[in-house]
Length: 508
Image 1 (cartoon, rainbow, N blue to C red):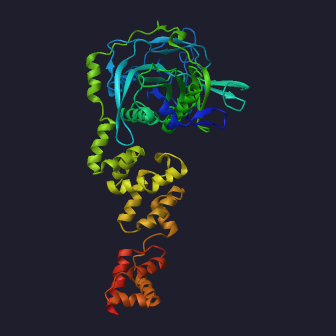
Image 2 (image 1 turned 120 degrees about the vertical axis):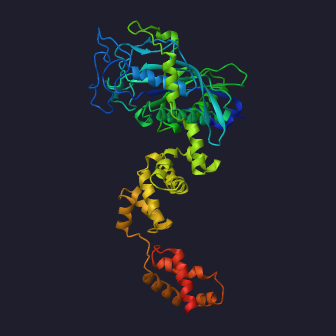
Image 3 (image 1 turned 60 degrees about the vertical axis):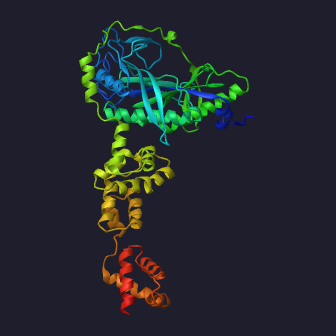
């Protein structure tokens, strides 16, 4: 018996666990990465994030008659770097094509892309899942193309074109160079399909940053994923009808979108219905997908070779020079750092899964030990990130500040308990660790005179405890230490307090 539920929107869903028992999910992911070149793919307009609308444009990016494109050589090099990092074969020659469709954000009425002759093809990427399992994702192609402009639909309640009063178009993004990476159908993931999809996109993001080809900031749309999903009765069955959820721009959303589509499609198939091949929109707020348009096939775009651009023929010498210059890839780097930091497999996996490698590395560079850096990022800061539902790197604290916090602990100016209070102040925007420590008066009490006065007061208040300790029973000494710590608001060094307590008792 398959369990069905109805979402608040009225869409019938099958419980995810039941769905993956009854059906075999197959995913495919198309990742678009904006290349961090100074200018656009085919013209000299500069890439400027957040510029006034329609100011970073030229006749080419506006599609004006007679304006001719010129290929951006740096973009080609970046595409080669990506292809090599993904273990792809590099084409000896490739060319651009016109992908014809009408939409206001495409001023030429076609997108200049690569169709049957991509610059890189037949690659793979080994992805590490949360439990350390390695899953290989086969890559069909990586090709160069240009981005479209950006539409803003004004009016209505959805922010989409349907129901809007009018639309505005900003062509600043039109013509920005993209590499699109297309997987082959990803099979064999089973119930872990959402995790595989998310881990794959995260791995790509890390590679883009390592290669230096993009800022790869998903919140800015530098990296966008289109997630294809279909279900079939068994792993031996033909592929089912797929949907394509467009422009998913966070790792968590990739995972949620796959889970939702599995449950939605399973409900349709279980009731004898037919899945429609279509694009779908992801809604971050409600965690659902909604229909977009019926999905076009390649022939609908009337691809034909771009007559204004010559083919690209990267020499083998150039390709091998780029291969030799590639930096250490993230997987190899993780293995090296784990050894350098002396982390166990579980400790390193936790750091990786939290997306904290760069944060921990920067904290160590700021003077912290590997153990202390991991303690803060995977302890208090990880709990704060989870509570506030943000990524670790989005917390309002820098690795340098975490290093400064640990330096205060190492210097004996604060203990771990006080350090947590300092951390709280930094996260609240009250300044650096030093500034918070001073403002809140949290420094450890190191004046023996002050501590001795507190010890004498505690001993006088608990004479029976003092007598037991004099008799050789050290167990109750904790009660005296606790009283001193309370009197000093936790700002005493407990080890020093213990020494002073034992000195006082043996002297009396």
